[in-house]
Image 1 (tube, rainbow, N blue to C red):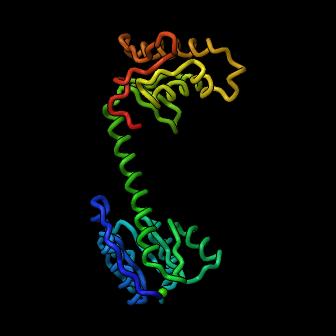
Image 2: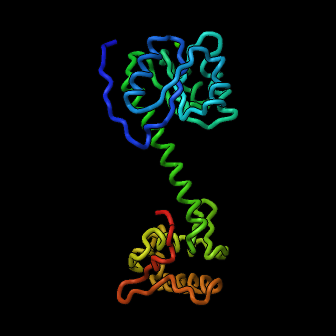
Image 3: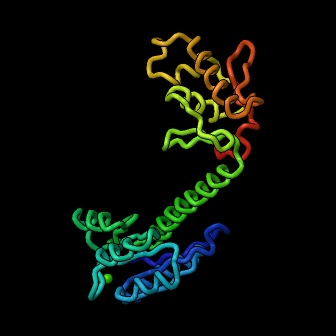
Length: 253
Ligand code: CA
């Protein structure tokens, strides 16, 4: 192992993240913790895998670096045990590169794998950083979605294929739903009929571009059924249609 200098590049958003290192080799654990701390993380160490469940429950780390080869209990069964009650990110550390080990860890619910031969603490920090960034982005998206539930008059639940206006479910056909989603993707932007058609249908040539007008008409009628003053979908003379940006106040994009 070549000596490396930990480099300092902590960022405010990850500075308080807590990483638990579960590793029975003290030198390796100390090295990882040095690098993690230099990168701005809190780091703690467990040499004994048998203590991991209690530690995770009590201290709620943001990520676990878990050695596969631990005396007594192996990392894979510990990973499975953690997964039974927690969705915290787990990165397995292994000295073995066999495919079976990788699959075993991932099936047990590990988020990532790092091979210890050759061991690179920089790689460990880079993976930790990438995973925590992903988790934080997911969290931010979920919070933004929750805000939009509360504040946005027009809301689309893409997974359920449902759209709501002022809290009321709009009885949209699949085409109307897709049309609304396209308009919502860029509120205030005027889409031409051709652009809308191209994104609505796999083969736009099979559809008359006046079909867009009839879908728009139906969408407006359904919005007006909720609020007769609704004027969310505007015609743009000589171009096509745009969605009134106010319709989406608070909507995450
Ligand atoms: Ca070990």
